[in-house]
Length: 316
Image (cartoon, rainbow, N blue to C red; front, side, top):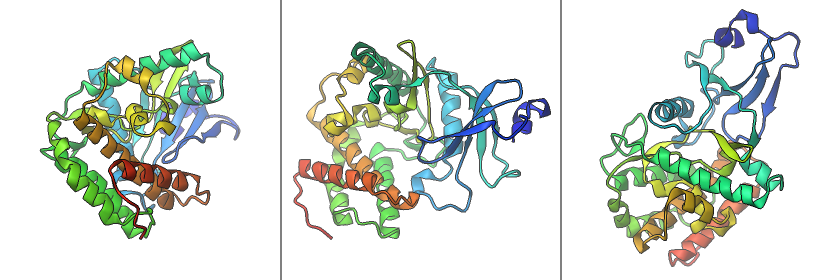
């Protein structure tokens, strides 16, 4: 794989040239040291036979398409892609090599108390400003970047949440509610989705842990595989509006230039958090997690959201 990407002269000597980067939950990633000492990151998608969520099929190809859009249409810093192999000739999976960013993970450094409060606040504002630049990219349809797309956001979002609910039902996942309850909440509130008339590039997964910071500045945005043409209010940085456990979004919103939300915007935002909670619950089964922390967390957040929608628990 290294020879294809960088040439035979860069094949490392010995066996200690790669180490796994473990905070990702989907693709596997390795930091690789080439023969000349240069470092790179290798990302490998799940093998073709592995069962994934409907939204996760072809995600590495989606990430490459997203990164191309970001490079072509913005000045938002992202790693350089050095080589991508989608042939599945060497391994039964897509993979690509990209630039290694020598910086601190913003989210991890913040959680570990390594950054001063003023640096954290400024980083949050910068992340909001960068996210707005990404959202300025206008798409041809709503839904997956490469299609098939939908003419309306209501249709696209309904399909997104329905795909995840069907994934959950197929795997027999107990989400703590009747699946029909989630569909009922969406149906009763779907009219607010019609306010979104223009498809925008939305990362979906732009948390602080998917950004790198050096000397107080964000130097790279990582992990673009979940990007879609959607409503910018769906961005991860706004999640704390509905679910305080995700942190105060004030700095992000200030940098983004987003003021207080209107009642209909609040409803849209709450629907997006509902979707996130369902994903967190369902994906634990597909990941084969033995530790149920994420599942339990998702259940708690889903209960809070359903309560915000005025629903009373009726356990399955």
